[in-house]
Structure formats: structure tokens, C-alpha cells
Image 1 (spheres, helix red, strand yellow):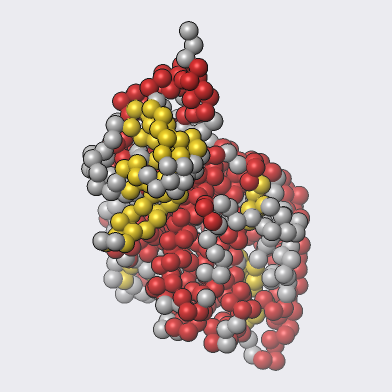
Image 2 (spheres, rainbow, N blue to C red):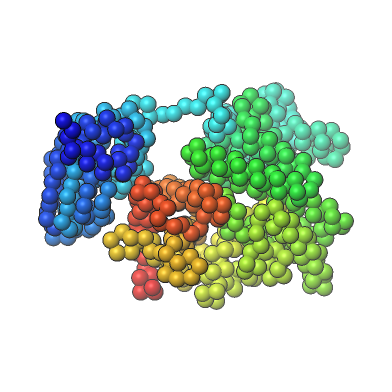
Length: 640
């Protein structure tokens, strides 16, 4: 005889994660053991510090509040759960008593799931386990430690095999015992050391930080040819600045970086910038020994391309690569870096070809700056192009002629980028606009004006132009501008406060009772603006904190928060939470953009699964937390 109650429970459970990952016999086995509980509003399911139950819970009807006691007679509602939400997972992962209180926010029907029945099924299914870990971590306000994962799975570490399709996404092997020299060393001494140690390169360092690199190729091309003598200081022939990356750089990213810049070595530093100490060196030989294909093939194709049509076809293949990485759940950190390098190489190749078509060399040194998402290394989908040109200072009487050359170049570049798939910026924030084709001194004056006479328009421009990255040209110009930005914002409390207040202009993505705040009217009525309400609040928070703490050479939002977590361990959980949330939301936007063949900005809520909504809401909690932190940190609640 059928157990109709158990079957009805099973039918309900299979609609929601993680139970939708179980087979029907497993669902029925669980459902037969489920305890059904009715609770009136205000009923306490379990209290903070109470001994753990033998069940966890899923809401059939109603709503439950999760409450944290802060001090006697004071508490905080951490979250609210509704139909299909799972809570009370602590017995699955931890032996301590409950860390929070669960209380019904309205009349409820709850299903209590026996842990002894469910645990063996979850341990054998990694997808279920990972989902539960995320849910539990969200409730504990700490989704970033590995301890719970290790406790739940015996095979917590996943090692890729050299024959795997994604071997190129492993961190590169690098030499840890490296030979360095001081900038005062003579070329003769450097050559003798390289010969004696049988090495092909030496890092030139000052106080443990890399300032240049010399390779045997430099000695052949610059000394053996008679351009320099062996008695000169090594600084005369070293390559500077050194390309630096953190130790977790992937094989694919290292390969395409070397191809893009025509170099054979990468310096590994503590935080991936020249501002911290050297910890290793990766060479082209390491790349040959290790296996990696697809991104490298695309990079070579970009460098060999001779027409805009070629680059357009390659760009389409890059989107296929991106789709594969997203669908196969490759970590976004790796995906982001690879796609950025391929996009950046595409921009560089376009500029190279346009310079040839100019039939005249640039009158002075210049740099092409990518702004916004590309400047932050966060541009994955087809989005608008935001860019600018900075050129070397020239006498006043030649300034406009110099600008005219670069405007002509920019017009060619912008047009070809648009053909490839980088749409024109509707606000005309592109290098072909005379306002954004300036000399170094003009850019410095512009940035100074924005930070001293700061209104709403200036804040908007700062949010775009402060996140710049060089895509082509002389890095000395962009470095000088970056130093100027830090100088004019250091101790500039008025500007930083205004920037912080602006970072709070987009309220929490959730309204009353955890509902998504959708567009009230217009073309995207009833859709959720993922960029405005979810991504930009984290991006803006990362920018103002990075400026406030004078963090240099790190524009990427996730990396900014990871650097902050290293600098301020007392707030590590919050900062890592922001990094995790940003990457999760960006990956979500990319996935839906690929599915809908658009930029993924506006989401139709009816198309989201319950699991997707739950994961987004967890990320939105982090947005709320960092916005509260900024209010306190910059004392700006009165400004809002």
C-alpha cells in the first residue's frame, strides 16, 4: 500500500535544492522519516546556544527569522527564510551548540529532516554537499573557511591531471630559489653570475622588490652588439618595469601573457604587483614543460591577425571559450584573467594595425587606457567600450596638433573595436572624444578638478576613470597618473566621504521580506537590474576603500577586497565575503548573458530557479553588510 503522505512530501522536496539532486527512491526514504510540525507565529524552533537537534528543517509554508543575540535584551535579525528554504544545518557540520536562534515570523508548516538518514546520501553526492555547505556558511556569516568542507568530504582537494582538458587552469610552477642583483651591479658582474649559475635571467631588486630584469637575450642584443659596454651599470640594459603576478597565476594566463608581451619570464611577488617582495620566477621553459593549449592558440591567432574580420571571428571563439568555462563551472578567478588577457590582446592588436595605417609615427609617447570593467579586468561579455588616451606633455604651441594625431588614431581604433563586438559607449566616453584624449598634465589637472570641486557629475566620472589600466603604450604615463591619483586623494577626507556616500546611492538589492527590488517602469519593467543593484555597490565599495587605504596597482574588485583582507585581518570575513559575492554575481550575470545573448544586466525573475534566487540573496546580504561598514567607517550616515 502506498504511503500517500510520504509521496506528497517527496513531491514537495524534489521542487527545491538540494533535494532535486536525489533519486526518487531516496526522496521517498527521507519522506517516510520526515516529522511534520505546525508552529504559530513567534514560536522558537531552536535557541542560540541550545543543544543541537537530530534534524534540520525545510519550510513547507510560512516564514522563519534567524536571529543573533548581541547582548542582553538586544538582538539582530540576520535573515528571513520562506517556502523551500533550508535552515538549521549546524548538526551536519559542527559539534558546537546552535550559534543563532530560529523563530517563526508567521504561521509555519515545517518538515524536519532526520540527519542520520540524509547525511550518507549527501556525503556521496558532492553537488548536494557543496550546496549545503554554502547554505550553512551563509547562516554562520562565514562562507569562506575550508574547515566545513573538509569535515564533510574526505576528498576535499581536487587535483587536475596533466591529461585533463582544464590542466591549463592549474597554477604555474615557478622557481623559488632565484638569483637577484642590485641596480648598482655592473653588466660584467651580471654576465659572470649568469654564466657561473647557468641561468638565463636575473631579477634586479631594491629592498627585495623587483625593479627590472636582465636576460641573456638582453646581453646579446644590447652588449654584444656594442650598444653598451660591460662596465656600465645593469640599469642601462635591464627591462623595466617587470611584469609581476601572484603565485596562483595559471598556466594559461602565464602563456598568453608571455605571448602578448613577447617575453620569456614573469616575476612572482607576494601580491602580484611590483610593490611587494619577490617570491619566485616563472619562465617560458616552465610553460613548455607544462601543458596548455586553447587560450594560447587564440592568443597566437590574435597576434597573427591582419584584418578586423579575423579579429571578429577570433572574438566569437573567445565567447565560445568563455561559455565552456562558465558551463563547466571553472573558477571565475581563472576565467576572468584568461578572458581579460585575450580581450586586452585584441585591443592591442587593433591599435598596432591602426598605427601602421596612420603612415606616420606617433609624435610623442602615449598610452591607450581601458576604463571601467575592462580597466578592472572584469569585462567578460560584449559590453560598451570605455577608453581614453594619455600622451606625453608637449609645448603649448604643438599641443593641438599632437592631439589631432591621437584623435585620428582613436577614431580608427574605436571604429574597429565596434566592428569586432565592443559597442560604442552611448555616453561617448571613448578616446576619439577630445575630452578624453589629453596630455599627462591635462589628465592630472582633470583628476585634480574632479577631486576638489566634486559634484554628482564629477563622482560619476571618477567612478569610471579611476579604474584605468594600460592596454597599449608607455606605462610610465599611466604609472605617473596613478601616483597622482593617490597623491590627490591621500588625506582628502571631503572627497573620500563624497565618494563613499555615492557608493551607498544604490540601496540593498532586497526590499521588504527578502524580495528582489525590480525596475518599476520602462523597457525593463519588473526585471532585476543586476549591474546597478548588485555589482556596482560592491565595485564602488571596493574602489573607495582602496583609495582610502592608498592601495596601488590593484583595480580588480575581487583582488581589492582580498588585499584588504590581508591588510586588516579583523575585517577579513567581511572583505573575503565581498570578494566571493562579487565573483558569484559576475559569474551569474555572465551565465545569463550567454544564455540570452545579451550583456546579462537585466534578469527576469520568473526565469530564475529557487537555487539561483537563494544564492543571489546570500550575496545580497554581503552587500548590505559592506554598505553598513562604509557608513560607519566614513561616518557618512548624515550625508545620505
